[in-house]
Image (cartoon, rainbow, N blue to C red; front, side):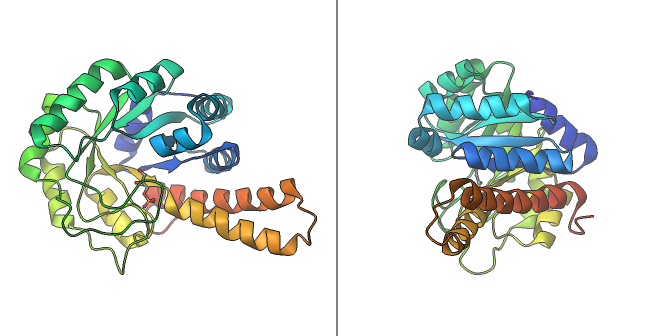
Length: 282
Ligand code: 13P
């Protein structure tokens, strides 16, 4: 069922665990991700970014994602990821999205606040996520950790949340979108300092490639929503390539795509278990 993102955040806060936010680009990924949530009987955020909406077409992709969420047997929030343009926020809310992330992290503090205050009005009762500091890499492509990207300043976090009215705060603690170069290094002390002052739950972007133990350490320090994209695309493409190699020139679309969907479902289930149950996955 389609629910307000606030409800799912509250679920994670009450359980002191984290909910998965998975990015989708099309019908097949959407179905594979919902299947994972249903198999684990867990709520999820189903996220579409501006790039995905542009690629698939806003009308078509939003219709697919919203219909899939409504049909699901578990709570699903349909989330607009990394919106930078107010027009896209308004369009998503009008279409029925129940959660929005407005990315003003490239702006100075006051500009980021102003951006989010305007979005707060547009988003109304639905969940609104802001970001303070910058997460390196790009949303849809393999990125890398950038040492020049500023991290979230704990001294600014409380005022940021209060002035913007956000429901969750995405942190920059050394995390990056895409594939990490070497071992990711997260500033856990900074995360603990942010948690100590933040009136809202924290969000970790760029979870692909972060070891399980480090994910668990982030959950212990107040992260309640975790975004995964690249690892799902990796599962999709690797199985697609393997399936095509075995297809023998039949171009059996349901078989080849079906195999890739199963792989994405399996990967997504592992993340759901890790975020919900901790590093043991049990
Ligand atoms: P990854 O692609 O690194 O998993 O990041 C996903 C993300 O943060 C989406 O907002």
